[in-house]
Length: 253
Image (cartoon, rainbow, N blue to C red):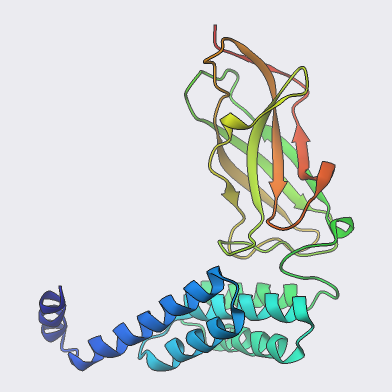
């Protein structure tokens, strides 16, 4: 693999020595991700900073990741220095990001940081509010076949919602509840994350997601669809159920 990489770099006129530089940067980034997984944030920040400094390429994805976890840990511990560094990283991306999308994303995350009392990992469920509208489902649902769900979701709470994939990302998913009130978790499909820019208070977004029918191994199922919100480490209680269909579906014969 290295030989092929060196040949490709030589053809492109890129010094082979840069391959080792980028490999070292990638190794540092991987170490940082491992530290994040184990919630050793100080080590992760050290590795991420070193990876960014070592690379000769722009690494906006890593910079956004660094800023997010600096924000998270700073908000959780009250560490002003970490919060200031998160803002500095995002300000640099807002001004000097290589694409308009990067600059816009940095602006949105700075706006989220500016909301008093808000944290990336929402813990105060009293500050959470969501409204689902304009739900569109197919007229019939077949067993063992995925189906589309379209709806609008509005952030009616006080806190911004973080978007994209990260350790404590909020998730949306569809589930079924029988007429007896039993939740059929075996029908749970892959979760739906919010877009990277998240949703600020008062904003509304159209979501397209995939649902799965409940299992019919035990025979016909009569149940209603629910759209549910989840975020690791936070119990939303009844607030987690954002929408319940007033009509049931009959699946199977």
